[in-house]
Image (tube, rainbow, N blue to C red; front, side):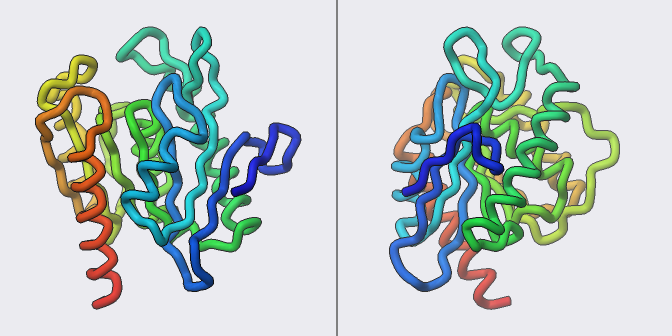
Length: 219
């Protein structure tokens, strides 16, 4: 496990966890929720794919004493200028990190939770084709999209909570037609859960990861 500080040319505090074997491992980009850090999703990711390698950057935006990936004006209202800037900044980091750690970014799957899921959605929409896919846990549509970019072959799993106390279900559902219009392969599931990640989220994601691996091997 490797830590990099803000002085690194990679410019994000982060952790990188290589795969447990010398065989090629699927890379995962782990994006935490508000108040989390680069450690939060690594135990979750190990359950999802114990043979994967994991890159987990820490959000740079401070909201009170909590970390985020981009600013918001108030809960539910995003600072779109900052989101655009932070998306570009993170994309640059991911490109450099993939070279340093020796994995193909277009093979990577982002796993994002809440604020991290919204950042992952922004990455997919702003940089179509950069990632192989994403798992979006408790996301919303980060900004209006009039002309969805082409994302044929990109896999997207959206996991919403039917009792989510922070995100109304209709806001989560708004993501689905945007990704479908882009040509992405979208699966949306509504789980009996609130805003927090549950074991059901982990199991559904594990099954989905296994299914897209099988599809990739057959293609």
